[in-house]
Every structure is written in C-alpha cells, then in structure tokens.
Image (tube, rainbow, N blue to C red):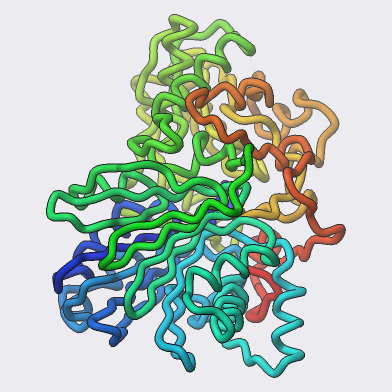
Length: 483
C-alpha cells in the first residue's frame, strides 16, 4: 500500500534541571509524533554525562516496553526519534538517535530532513578515513559536528560552522554531556518548536502536539537558521544563519503534521479546513454527500462541505490497529490490504452521488481501489477532489518522492485521463496559489517544488532514485546511497 506520501521522521528533546524520568517524557512525546515515522524509533538518555540508549524497528509502544524504558534509567536530558526511512531499508544502523563517543565527549543526534549534498559530504569523510556504519544523512551531520568540534570551544559553535556547508533540510536536536542544542536549516523546510513544562523543563519537538502530550506550553517555533542552546545557565539563541524569508514544506499543513498541532502560529486543522473550502470554490460539483479519506482528508472534506453546502458524511471506517501502510507481493494481497485498512459505510453511500476528498494522489493505485470500493457499495457517482496540486517533480528535502517515473500526474497528459485511470466520474486538484493561502499566519513562506519544480535552493542535477522506486520493488537493495 505504498501509494501515499511519507515524510521522514520526528524528533524530540527534553532538558531538566534535576534528575528525572526523562525517558518516560520522551516516550510519551514520541507516541504523539508516531504519525511522522512508523518504521523505527529510539531514545537516548543523559545521566550526568553518561549516555544510555535503546532503539529498534517497530512502533513506539512495541519498542519501548516498560522493561526497556526502565533500562534507560533516569537523567536530566533525553532525545528521541521516530523514523520513516526514505532509503536505507532495514539497516539497523540508520535508526536514531545516533550516539557517538568522540575525543571531546559524548554526542547524540536526532535529525528530520534530507541533505542535498549528503553524497559529497560522505565521500569527503570517507576519503579522510571515516567509516560509516549506516546510510543516512544524519551520520554525515554527526561527522561534520565532531570534526568542527575538535577546533571549536563549544558544540554550538561547531554547529554554527557546520551550517555553512551542509545544504538541504534539517531540523535537528543534539545532546551533549551538558547541553541540549536544537537547530533548523535556514529555509525551515520542516518544523521545530520549543516549550516549557510547569516544573521548568525545556522541551523541543517537531510538532506542538508532542508538547501538549507531556503538559508543556508552546513558547514558539525555532526560526529557520536559528540555533537554540539549553543548559543549566538557561537558554540562548544564535540567529546568525537566519534569513528574511524561509520556505517550509507546504505539505506539513496538507498532510504530514497532526491536525491538533500549531506550526508557525497557524493551526494545521484550520489550514486543512481552508484547503477544503478553496477546493469547493475552485472545483464545484453537484452531489449528495461529501466524504473524506481518513485521516488527513477528513478536515478538508468538512471544509468542502461547509463551503459547498453539500452534507458531510462518514464514508469510511479506518482500522486503527494497522499501524502503517505496507506493500504486499501480489495484486490480490494489495487489494485485500485496502479492504483491511478501510471499510465503507454502505448506508451513507448507496445510491448517492459522492464527493471523495483526499490529501494527495501519488501513484493512483490506492485511490483507484477506494473508488472501486465505493462503486461496489452502490455509489451512483464518484467525484474525487484532492486538497493539493498534482505531484509532478521530485522532492529533495525529506519525503520519498525522488522521481517522476511513478507519479500518475506525470504519466498522463490530462486530468481527465487520470480520472479515467482511477475510475472516477470527475477529478480536480487544489491550485498551487491556494496552497500558499492555507496558513496566512505563517510568514516564512513555503516550498512547493514538488508541484512546480521551483525549488528555494539549488538541487542536484541528478537525483538518486533509491527512495520511491525501491519501496515499490519487491527486492529493494539493502545498501542505499542517500537517506
């Protein structure tokens, strides 16, 4: 069922002024960030400079049993990570946080994003004798920090120098023996925020929903290009790398983030409601009911209903016990997988003209199966509306669309042809212009390169096609060049 967009991972960090059960806080926060990565997870704990860590394939509650959490012990700092691998397959060395012991102390790194110059960095370090254990961009970031740290007075100073030569998307948290450091790339491709608990602990996370889970109050988003350093002396900010304008991935609002999160002062839920309203204005159609494909299509469906005055109804029941999408080896098994994940509420569909709202179409195979299920349930007409523009270009900054070859919008010349392919009576997408108005409180700007081909920074002339295609292959390579 790898027919939808996936984002790479989520990060979390906590700094206490006392010894506490920081692993438990990290566990709860990662549970809230599970939607950002469902393949693997890990937690590293700092107890007076002594690091302990545990990480494994699987969902957060499966990996962090009470016994495994207890083994991590107590401490005053912890960082955590949930992973969706864009590449690297099942290599356990790619699971984060990465924990490194170097001549100046211990270091743990958690990273969300993709670097566009990772192959060059890796080659540079390997020619210098470095040995890489995994295949992720994060290892190149870690090597870069350690290398600069040898000549710098502090880790944050080393990070500031590293940011001069790593290029791409990175929302990172670094833990040292005495500090928790968070930094975000100058474009701010992916979110990173920080807050404070009632007992004075500072926390950093990919999304505010993680802060809510542990009872922390959101202070603000870390600015694109900003370095935040948290220690016993308090919190300090370095904005040397900040620019006037950033370019956050617009899909954070459309799909990636949890709807109860607030990113750059804008509610994700309200942004998706707006997407549905804009979609109804741009692409009206006469129908009897509006339904949304769970989960991120539901808010947009509500917005479409509100604007169009066509009643909203529940069309699908999602099986909550399926933790992740997956690929099955045969067509028959893939069809069964859709039926297991989604069930149709036939009483709401039979004899109706249905508007089905989803957040995106990648390959088109899953939505074709869902349209077929609606037909089998007795739908008179099925009109598909998508709360994002068509994917026509690769993403270089942390999603798994790195080639046009399997994108349905690149395989057909017209939207009518795509509609015929998925079996819908009609199909329409949200305009690119509308996506820039979904979160008007967000002032840093958006990246829409996957829709337009216009990227905010220079991208490689050749993209290694080892993220999207290998996920579609039954025999994916074990070793990949990029993550």
